[in-house]
Amino acid sequence: MGNCCSQEHPSKQGGGAYQVAAGKAAVCEVLFYPDEALPCRFMDKCRRNNCTYAHHATSLSRMLDFLNSAQRSLDICVFTITCNEIADVLLDAHKRGVHVRIISDDDQMASNGSDVARLSKAGIAVKIDNSKYHMHNKFAIIDKRLLMNGSFK
Image (tube, rainbow, N blue to C red; front, top):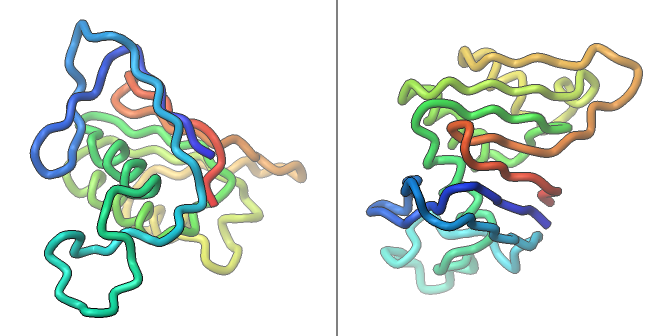
């Protein structure tokens, strides 16, 4: 289960991005994981007859929309990142000039499937805990206005 909370209300804009509208009521959205199916990259433009991916908004696609809404900063503190869709959104944000910073667990950075080393090699600032204890926080702060926290599976 994940949770997105902000002091300001994100209003939907074109392209699935969310822009913060100043002066609006607080928003709290709960996203449940796992989704029944991963979102189809083509959504409503999919032409595959037997596509088993979701062709509607999923919790993952909502989370990706929130992460993709970052315009200035994206601060992430997670045990690890193993979902390529999440890693790709972080790379895209970095390429658009968003200041992306990640704190992660040192043991998990080198584990199979972890995208953290790849993100670091791409120029994203990554700090690891360098501790015998696991760094097991799970949150992201988008543009210093939106907090996402919880577990993603």
